[in-house]
Length: 307
Image 1 (spheres, helix red, strand yellow):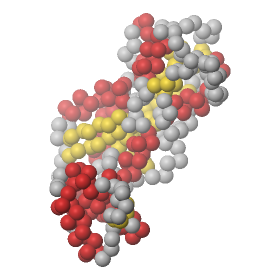
Image 2 (cartoon, rainbow, N blue to C red):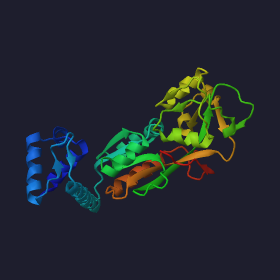
Image 3 (cartoon, rainbow, N blue to C red):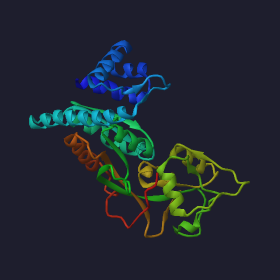
Image 4 (cartoon, rainbow, N blue to C red):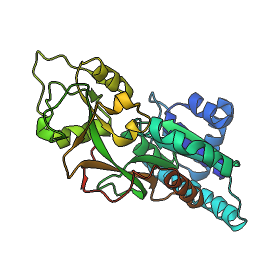
């Protein structure tokens, strides 16, 4: 038995397909199949039921796979501990960032992080919260930048910043500061299902179902919603970071909520079994160092987290 065999069975479990697993592991399918067969023979257990399509683990295989994941995590921890002992800062760091944060936060720190730590290969994926949490659990990501989860037992987090929500609309409001009750559900442009920012807005505004005859827009991009609002097709709600590079004309369309203003808290989140502590700590420090002064952790009201 060797670590390579354990990597192979985890890859097959991930893809439920031998050829795809072989591609990920950069070996031929016959080689991967032979190595897995040798492991099964050594353990005297069938890990996968090959009669089903897609292939799936047997009941005994499920337990073997869980233990294989633990062994590989501990192996990686040993490697990271050795790097820390010789003060080496390098290797790969895979992070996921949710779409309502990525376009605004990444440009603030990516270049400076790369300059300071050129030996670190930073791999960034833009993913919704649900997918980040799953990939953290599966070991496919080292960390995620997302809204601090509530009641998520399998992760640890490093708080990064808080940002308030603002209304974006070209039309005039009678009030200088808005309440949730001032938001008309039939005018509100929302992100698609699956975005936690959409869930937070719905929770905050206590939105009811829209009228059947209303014109409805949903999008996967806050920038699309902002552009629609510019065309007087509705109003939208943005995180404050989305306004950092606004022009004077765009800022004139930003309306603040009355105090206590709704905010979201953003964190760097890792699986409890994470091994790259030194790299994730350096990443968190670099993000916080490059944040605008207006983004801070002391905020009045936190909008509840929801996936």
